[in-house]
Image 1: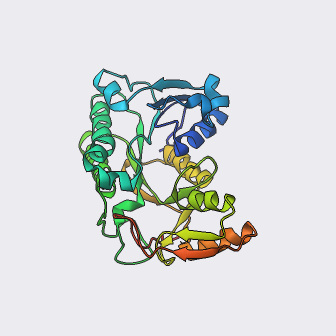
Image 2: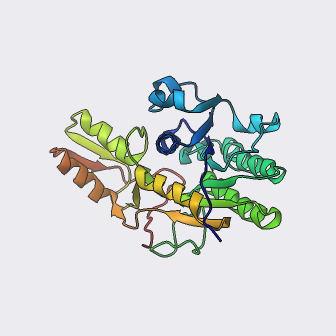
Image 3: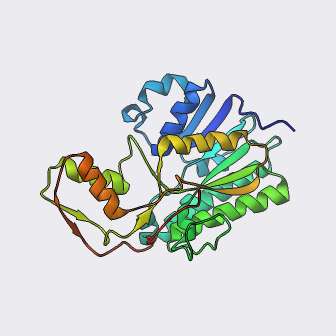
Length: 285
C-alpha cells in the first residue's frame, strides 16, 4: 500500500494562532491550497500578514460553522488546532474549556462521520493528559491522570477520535504536544523569562522552586511532526507523543537563558505553582 498522499487542499482550524500560523506558512511554502478558520480578527497584524493573498481565510467559530453546514468534502487533511490552550483558563472556567476543546472536537468528528469522503483529521492533544506521570520517561501507553479540566478535555478528544476511527472508519491521528516554543509565541515560560530579562531587572522572579522538568520542543520540529502525520500510511486513532526527548529543569533553563543574554540577575523562586500544572515531564526517545 502506498503512503498517504498530502495533496493540495488543507484546512487548519485555529490557523491564526502561534502553532497554526507556523503550520500555515510551511504549507504555503509547499504550494498547498490552505484554508484557515479562526475567530481572530487580527490577521493583518499577525505573522500571516504577508501570506494572506496565498490562503483562504474564514473568520468565525468552527462549531457554529459546522452547525450551519460548512462543507468538509474535498479537503485532504484537517489540522485541528482550534480551542482553549490555557490550563489556567480551564481551571477558572471548566465549562468554557469543555465546549472549546471537547465540544468542538466532537462536533468536528460528527461532521466527518457524515462526510462522503472524509479527510484525514490530525487532532492536537497535549502532554497535560498525563498529569504528574507515575514513571519517567513518559511513553504513550503510560497511565493518563490529568490534573486540569484542560487535560481531561484533551484526553476525551483523543478517545472520541479513536472510537470514531474504529466505528466509522474515520482517518484520525492525535498528537500529544509537549512544551512547544519558538518565534511569535507570546506566553509560557520561555517567553515570560525573555520578556522579564528584556526589562533589565536586577531580580528575576520565577514560579515554582526550579526543580520542575519540561521537555521543550521547537516549533519547526512540531511542524515536521504534523506534516509526517499527513503522510504516514495508517490513521486509525493512533496517539503520538510529540517532544524533543530531552528534559530540562526550570532552574537549568533560567540559568542557560541568563548566560546567553549575558545577564546575572538575582533569581528568586516563588515555591508556588498554579493549579493543574504538572511537576515533571520527560519523554522517551
